[in-house]
Amino acid sequence: MIKRHRDGARIAGGAAAVLLLGVSGTASAQDLSAAVEEIRIGLDTVWVLLGAFLVFFMQAGFGMVEAGFIRAKNTCNILTKNFLDFCMASLGFFVCGYALMFGDGNGLFGFKGWFLIGAESGAGVPLYAFWLFQAAFCGAAATIVAGGMAERMKFVAYLVYSFLISALIYPIIGHWVWGGGWLGGMNFADFAGSTVVHTVGGCAALVGTWILKPRTGKYSPDGKPRVIPAHSIPLASLGVFILWFGWFGFNAGSSLSVGDGSLIGRVAINTNLAAAMGGIVAMLTVWKRFGKPDLSMAMNGALAGLVAITAPCAFVDPWAALVIGSVGGYLVVRGVELLDKLHLDDPVGAFPVHGMCGIWGTLAVGIFGRETLGLVNNGFVYGGNPTQLGIQLLGSLSVVAFVVVTMGLVFKVIDVTIGLRASTEEELRGLDIGEHGMEAYGGFQIFSTT
Image (cartoon, rainbow, N blue to C red; front, side):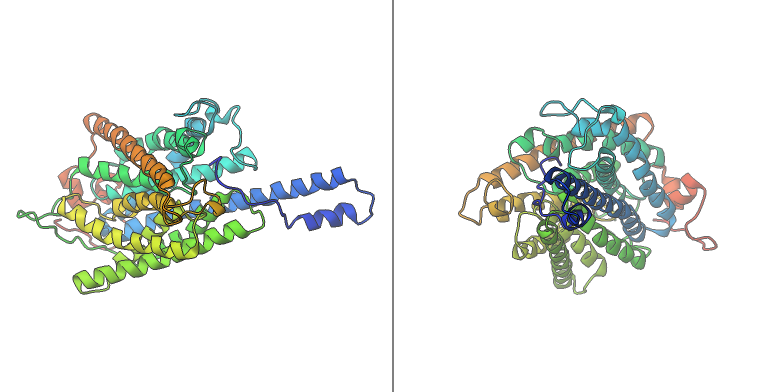
């Protein structure tokens, strides 16, 4: 995050400083400069906190999407996991996550700043504002996994996982890219987190899904996948709109400053265009392949476009954002099909959306990025130079390998100690009753044999 590009120095608040100190003509140049700087810091702090609040609100979006896409009998369970995700992420990132990610250290991880003692801000805003913004990102990475492992994972096992990824796994990768680590030193570019947040969460979901095995009844005896319908498409639709809205804080807030507005404006338009094209292309793809314009797939297509544009949003032109979002929308449809063929049961499409499209967005920086927009090397389409693309590929592969190995160990240890999967009886009755003793929809009889 330290290396995220900060827009120029023209501050709108400077006019206010002139009125305050210059109207009498007696203020010194030093006083005026100090006043302008104070206004700049204040404005940037408000901007970063606004971004943090929007990213925090995305937790509600994730909760609604995941709840809508699963069965009614597991709604309380998935919402509780989403709620506790941010609680665990906040604690883990406060205790040691921030120190590992942004503390002074080496190319692999930081050492300084446990419990924020002696910690320093990684941007030109106060430490606590910067920490909250980063903690919201940490929570987003953790909550992605809930959808991929939905409807059959023990609640206590999920809490342990959530703390470990927030306190250890995510911060180490964040240090590599944003905290002065080895990937940042190689000029690896990830403006807002296609790799650091989404590839991490998506690949962790894939590993967990593989270890956890499919839901009971997902595949017939002959191996063909069975459709387990979403219980509330309206709820999922609300979640997607919330996520789309929050993504403007996710991406544009990652500028960490307001500047003259040109950077945040470019990031915002690219974010919107990629989401729009992702939704359209996913809908057209599923329509052509299966004969119906599936809303659930169109919504995942929009999310895929958002994930894909997260890394390159500051470094590409709007036309490139359209291409990046389009590819993301196509990938998510084919990715869902691929997982079904491999018997990997991902109820909400966490890996196709976040893992596959996170990798694609990371590579897109090396294809469409422009040096004049802040990238160190031009992308491949501008002169055929493969340098940046090679750096992006190395970084993405390194992160995927690290997540697969570490999260594989985490899930295996959890499985052999406290157990990872709920019992078959609890799964059939629903985790709402089995683990929480409550139902999402009081007064309704909710039960199924799958």
